[in-house]
Amino acid sequence: MFGWGELGGAGGGAVKIILLGLWFATCMNSQAQLVQVGPTDPHFCDKIERIKPNLELAKSMVVRGKIVDQSGALFKNSRVELRIYVSSGQQRLMKAVTTDSNGHFDLGEIEAGRYRLLASSNRVFQQPESIECSEKSLCDIQLVLRVNPTDMPESLCPIK
Image (tube, rainbow, N blue to C red):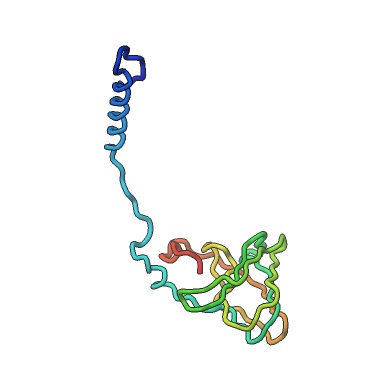
């Protein structure tokens, strides 16, 4: 049993330090188990998931829309990102907005180009594969997101 009572006389402080050292050594020798979650390959996600642009604009237009899930529940105060598509492994954030209390978002005027629109900020919901915009000056998107299975290997990967 270790205690911190006064040991009296000179050197009492040294005894306290030795007792503390014994306690620390005992704790450090406790057994622990290291558990790894997910794959060991740092390029695992890039290998199993091929990202493609899901929004291609032939000309500059205003991009806005509404997001709901399969039950019709609104995506309130949810982050929506528009990324410039560079390659399957690289997209650059262009703009991020938050949906309002009715699930609406407005990205404003977006130049012609190839983009990746992320309508959900996590992997709980599948990202839209393809978003169609007419040749007008307004791209009004009505998205219904489906729930993702959580037992798939890619469920551990960051959202792209």
